Image (cartoon, rainbow, N blue to C red; front, side, top):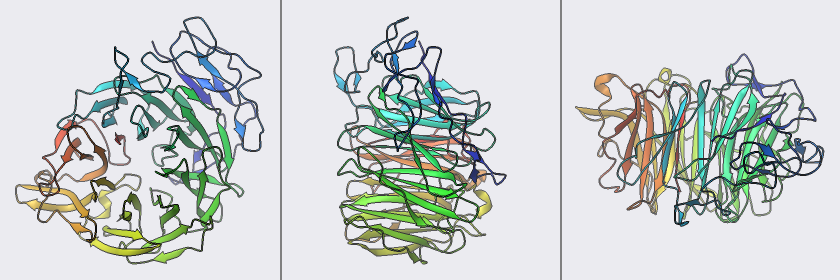
Length: 528
């Protein structure tokens, strides 16, 4: 039995003729609501199993703004034909944990979620050695561009969101995933179908103390909607308005503080006279006012900014559309943001893709430039309110014509006390196994060190002329701690694993030939 609740927002984010710059002229209608075959009414949204939707409570469901405008609504799923006080998904417990037949709680394993070119969505669990047989979660009617997946702090459940095209709008399909089963999708209408494959207008993060998920997604005119998902309960959508006139949100990122319920949300914004980066923080109950970190020069066609918490401070890095290097911001424990400091040395070009990872000894970073003519890659380490390392690690990358801006060309993860980054590289390795995958390691009290010259990823791409287009990294803890690498290249989607830094990555294995990661990243890794 399936169940789908759709948020129909008549005013949706639109994209300009420039394929990645979002603009919008409409306003949010006051009666925008969750709709289905039954009337929606009153408070939160409880998604379970049942043949019909119902509930109790006052007035029609609506989008609630931060100033209290709008009316509450609820959708509850109960037994077949019975609207009421909220059914639950079979196998879903009150704590949102996955269950077995005996009722024992199980952890969600590290999982690869991907979409094939026929728009079928699959999930395959990793057991520490190999992927299980993929299970089809759903099939969309239109192309899929971006997938994000996040795991709850206790690993009992996860949230998966998939952005793709629709008949009249861009669609965001959201699934609650429990390892051994996946709840039916909730579908949000968030944009126009022609261009929604070129900018990821949503993200997910978890409150680390409560275990609740925060889903944020773009709406027109600079509006950002957010909802809290607590097990099977979905809060009413609320809207935060980014200051300015005729503003449109492009990329959205959400990053959790591992020591609190705070979540930093960053959005790149386009207006008539500026290309800005705004950041605002969720404190567990509400958003702080948005703060404009950079008023102009932001890169709008890529994931060109990132945020990281460290010991109460919030670090923000962003690329510049014309200047080499990156802009640096630091929100201290006093809550203030000093002016931007621009650092030109890492990488040698514009930082088109930025990935940060909080480590016990600071914030590690990887920056990829694929603008101009020659791509380059840089790494850094920030701690004690300053940079202790900024390195142009690799300037011999493929020509930028190999890459589309929206694809994710680097990622960074923690393995023990080491930070590991993988990135799209020029061909390296043995003559019969030259791959376009570079990787580097940062250990405590050492500098970032490139690995591919001495310990290359054993994969023959050179003989086929194949190039890695996009990639993701995630931790796993099955059997032993390690990293799972998923990457899309010309011949499909592959995975490789790393458990021993001295042994390097395993030989990549083809998962699915029918995955296109050239222009976007239609796959994600779900890990702790």
